[in-house]
Length: 104
Image (cartoon, rainbow, N blue to C red):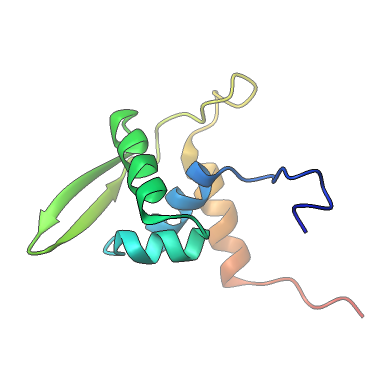
């Protein structure tokens, strides 16, 4: 649990939102918030951050948004900024496509 680990997590909410959108580019903000266990307001602020930084683009389609990711943008931490965000997305896509077997 997060409380047992001192309240921190390995993935930021920004990474979790980006991964949720990568899974479904037509996902609603409400669905993103639920998947990431954050408020809709926080999800909206994160989407705005990601859009301003060039990691995604929003397009209004009817009453919903469609998101286009820009996976060639670099990761933001200086230790990883030589890698494109695509590496993170591909890592999680591979894990979801082929989940690890249960220990035992």
